[in-house]
Length: 74
Image 1 (cartoon, one colour):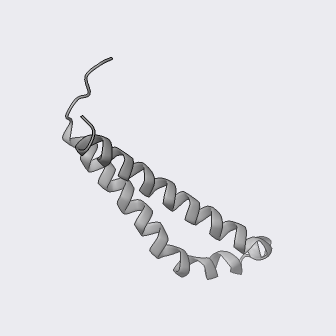
Image 2 (cartoon, one colour):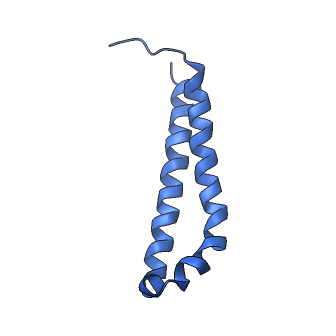
Image 3 (tube, helix red, strand yellow):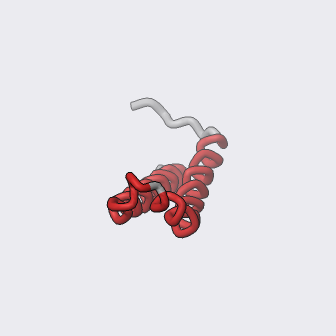
């Protein structure tokens, strides 16, 4: 098995993923009224909200996973 490189950009990328996920979580309540103002999206607000939160948790999970394998796995 190939040895992993200790590239510092991996840590920066992981922090960017976590930051993007947290940013989405804080942005959802602000942007949802604008999305629901569009007539074609007004009936599917719950589904859109669930998709945004799912995307945020996937980003946070990916960043945490990268950091976990960087610092706690040998």
